[in-house]
Amino acid sequence: MAEKPEPLKSAPAEPSLADVREDLDQLRADFARLLDTLGKTARHGVKGAAGEAETAAGDVQDWAEGQYLTLRETIREQPVTACAIAAGVGVILGQLLLRR
Image 1: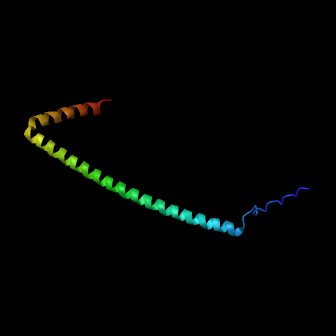
Image 2 (image 1 turned 90 degrees about the vertical axis):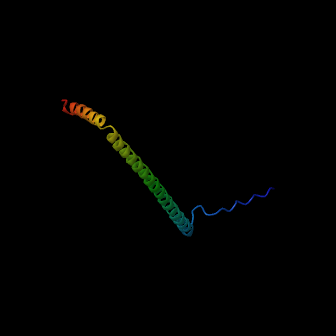
Image 3 (image 1 turned 180 degrees about the vertical axis):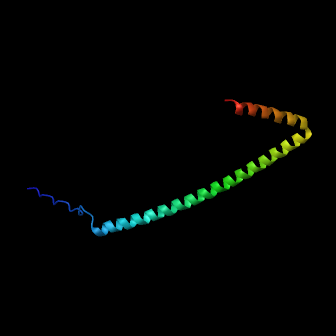
């Protein structure tokens, strides 16, 4: 007759309390590393954005100063034209604002 094979012995179906604690400790360590990485990434992003904003503000300030100087020089060179333009803009704005 044929011999009957022995059933395979398997590990217990439920993990022990020590296994669960070990898994929780590993999960805590992984979560702590994740938070540290996220913090470093956020700080790096904020520093980069602040630098870009500072550069853009400087560029806008330079542009505005250039426009101011150009306008000032144009008014000095052509005062009658500047007064006529200012009066025309005033009339148009007055008509728009007084219209009901």
